[in-house]
Every structure is written in structure tokens, then in C-alpha cells.
Amino acid sequence: MDSSQTVKIVHLSSVHGDHDVRILLKECSSLASKLDNVSVNLILAGVKEREEFGVHIHSVSKYYGSRLKRMWLTVNQVFLKAISLDADIYHLHDPELLRIALKLKRRGKIVVYDAHEDLPRQIMGKSYLPLKSLLAAFFERYENYVVKRLDGVVTATPFIADRFKKVNDLTIDINNFPLESEIEFTKNDASVKENRVCFIGGISSIRGISQLVDAFENSEVRLSLAGEIESEYFNELTVKNGWRNVDALGFINRSHAVALKQKCLAGIVTFLPYPNHINAQPNKIFEYMAAGLPVIGSNFPLWKEIIEQNNCGICVDPSDSMAIAEAIHHLASNKELARKMGENGSRLVKEKYNWLQEENKLIDFYRQLMQSSCK
Image 1 (tube, rainbow, N blue to C red):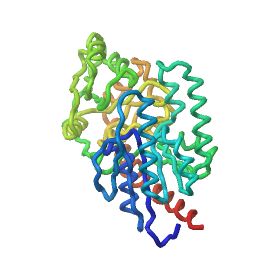
Image 2 (image 1 turned 135 degrees about the horizontal axis):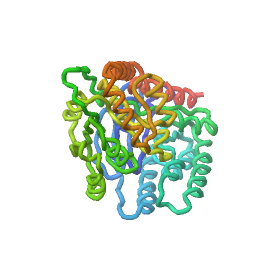
Image 3 (image 1 turned 30 degrees about the horizontal axis):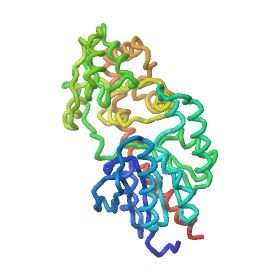
Image 4 (image 1 turned 60 degrees about the vertical axis):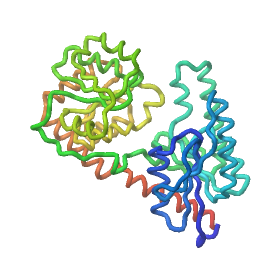
């Protein structure tokens, strides 16, 4: 690759949509705006072809029906489009694309794998899968076999990065910290605070909502529960004693979410300890912090490092409704402590937990890839 010529970069996904925040709005747009002499392309399935954020978006046919059919046929189409673009660097965003990774390598291309999730642990969290332990072990061996032969690995968390560093030296964690446009820094005004806390986001049993509602059975604090709830699960929640202290708001837009956070004493994210939750970094943690709210989170090691070590909130056993209730009561009874924790969180999002820091790491990673290819 001649460093004076335009470097063509292609990101590929057979699964994600055309406004995926990590792929298009963060990684692709950052590369297009921050690197000189590059052409950034993105291949997706079933989207409108266009140029957006400086990124050339290409589309292949989207197949419906069984998951296996989609995986096989769509990936084949993505591969054909990828080789037709004849790029220098290919950046793969889905585990199912690993079967074309070595094909691209054999064509002399630079190939990067982006691990958004820890696939083996994700499989272990799916209770409906038969022989999930064997499947998880198989996919971990397969991932490691392919990744060892690639030019680099990008991961969404430090935990996933530690796993892949054992098989590929050029591994870096590019965390999903929020874009400036994703977060709202708000003034923490005590005069508008109400005796309530909030959960904003997808609502399901594995996200600990049943235990959260139970925590409000004897509470003097109210819970604002913002997000869509499937009817069957809604019916299950409404018969709980704690439901009398819950305000179910349904889906709310961004401006409503900002207004809600300004009124609340704390933000809650008590996901249950499924393997794929333990090492995740939900954006809502950082959104609560940006709004000046202390966070009541699950007591996973990574979350405790973010929340408790930075004195931004309290971590509890998410399966223990009494522990959740005690944390809520503690913050509601200690307004000055809650205020200080909220201020710590807001400052840290501005200084550390934001996309600008991760963008710099991504650009350095790509410059290293391009320099090694010129040798």
C-alpha cells in the first residue's frame, strides 16, 4: 500500500442497520473525518445506498426467514460486494462474517474483526439453547482460530480485549462511550428534584425489572419506568405490590428523558448477572452520569470499577430487591451525598467516558495498520 495514495476502507455487517451508532456514527464517521487520504465505505443489507457523514454506504439483498438462511445467503452477498470494492482494509462487525475473513486475507487484504459482544458468554446466557456449553466452547475455539490470523481486533470492552490479546497482539478496546450528541449535560438543580428514581431503556425480565419493582413495595420513593413493555410482562409486573409506587411511562423521546432525569434523585440499571451483561457497559450508565445523577447499578466487577471506584453511585446485588431498596433509601436520605456523586459522574463523562477519547484510540489503531502495510 503506497502511503501517498488513497486508502480504501470497508466496514461490513450482515446484521446491523444503517444508523447503528457504533458502526456508522462512531467508527466510520470518525475515520472519514479524522484520517487523510482515505475512502470509507460501509456494506449493509437492505438499506438505501447513499453517502452520509462522509461514508459511502452500499447495500446488498436482505434475506428473511430462518436465521441460518440469513446468515448464509446475506454473508455470501456481503462477501461478493466486498471483493467488488477491492479495498485495502476490511473491518468485520459480526461473528458470522468470520467465515469470509480468511478468504479476504488470502487476497492480500488487511482484515480487522470488531467484537461488539463476548459471543461465547452470550451463548451461555441463552437458556433456550440446547447444549449451550458445547456451542460456546466451539465458537470460542473458532473465533480464536480465525482472529489469530487477522491483522487486528477491536473490542467493545476491556474484558473482551483481554480475551483476544491472548491470540492477537494488535487488539484494542474501543469502548461504546457516548457521543457528545448522545448525552445531555444538565444542571443538577435541587429545587426541581422529586422523591423518585428512574429506569430509562428496554424493559425485560433479564434486565432485573421484576426485582426492581419489588424494591418499591414499602418505599416512599417512586419509580419512573420509561420504556416499552410487552403485554405479557406488563401483566406480570402490575400484580406486584411494588407496582403501586411505579409510574409506567412507556417509550419516551429524548427531550422527555432529559426532563425526567432532571427531576430524579438517581438513575437505576440493575441488569441480572447473565454472562453477556457482566462485562457490558450500557450507555445508560453514562447518560445518568452526564445528567448529574448518582447511579444504582449491578455489582459486576466492571460496573463497580466505573460506578463505585469513581464515587458516582452504589452497586448492589441486582437479584436482591431489599438491597436495591436500601440503596434507594440511602440516596434519598442523603441528598448531599447524592449530589456529590452526581457531580463526580458528570465530570467523568466530560473528561473520560466519552467518544472523543475512544475516537483517538481508533485513529491511532488505523494509522498503525496502515503503517505496517507500507513496510
